[in-house]
Every structure is written in C-alpha cells, then in structure tokens.
Image 1 (cartoon, rainbow, N blue to C red):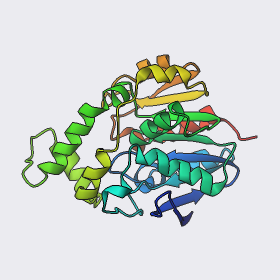
Image 2: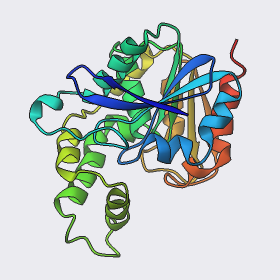
Image 3: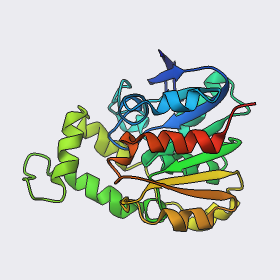
Length: 251
C-alpha cells in the first residue's frame, strides 16, 4: 500500500491510497467514512487487485487522511466530482474504471451523468434512486445529526449516525459545508450513462432507495445482491468478490 497526496483544483492536498498494479480502478468511499473503512480494512482492495488492477482509493476532503478545509471557497457545487476530476487529471488517466460505495457511487454517477468523468465502466455500490433524485431528504437527516450532535440520545434514529461520525473524527463544521454542495440528480440523466455498470447492494440495504430501480434506469447495468445492510455489506467479502468478478481479469 502506498499513500500519497495530490493538489486538487483549489490547492487542497487530498490523500490517495494505491494498491496493486495493472488497469486503473478509482474507488470512492461513503459519507463520513474513508478508503480505510470501506475498501482496505475488510480486504476489498486485495480481492480486486488480484484480478490485475491498480486500486486507486481517494479520501474525500473532510474524510480519512484528507484535510477538512474551512472557507466557502473550498466547497463549490458538486465539489467531490471536481476532486475526482482533479485526481484523474493528476494521474493522466484516459482509460480507467470508476466506482464507489454510497456517497462514492453518488459522486460517480453525478460525474458521469454531467460529463465531467468518462470512465470505461462504472460501479455503484450501496446506492438506489432515492439517494440520487431524492438526496435532499438524506442530506437533511445528516444535517440534523451535525446540528443536534450534542443532544441526540440513544433510541433516536440519528444516534447510530452520530456515533459513527464521532468514531471517524469528522470535523462537523466542514461536513456541514460539504453537505450543502451536493444537489439532487435529475434521474432522466441516467439514460445517458451508457457505460457498462455494476449496481451492487446489500440484500437488507434500502438506505438509498431501490438498487433494482437504479439498475433498470441505466442502459447497460448488471444488478447484483450481496448479504448485509448498508453498514454491514461493506464488511462482507462478497462485496469485493462481486466487484472483482464483474470486472474480470484485466487485459
């Protein structure tokens, strides 16, 4: 595992974790998580790299080993898409695959649907149509977690999210700014996402709506179900195996 830093569009230096060698696959993690928590800790990166891929795992700003800058200038519209575009430009990637879990899947689909990112293939894990077209409701839940952080009690539906956010050491002020950069996606744009796509989701995961509906809206999608909920599916070997099997051996 090699970890390095690169300057994004606004000069903020983001952390990039690289593993394996071969065809480049950019993987993006979920909200308030990190590359370590989603891809490395549970060995998903190893399962994928074994098929002949260099797994390029970004820590989004405000997450993992990347900084949490202050100032509105660091949080323009769809900032995470711009960070991924900066990474692709930094590495000089022209033929690559791109995917992510939850927020990472959302960022992937926004970037491709709006023409900012042009991978050969895409992976959307832990994502359904509600997490795209109805994102403002999901974002409102997380804003409440941040705004009421010190008063949320056990038994409150937001308590688990509060606990996870705290465990990851997230800067709440920066996270609040980041949430305000994330718009809903016009689901009609999914018809223009013509890359082969894998939509993979836990059997008990409805956090971001219907993965089946998302797969149906993408012209060339394969839907795979793996065990787990939204939080537990990333810990299961079946998630990494599903991604590796769909990608196949790199040429």
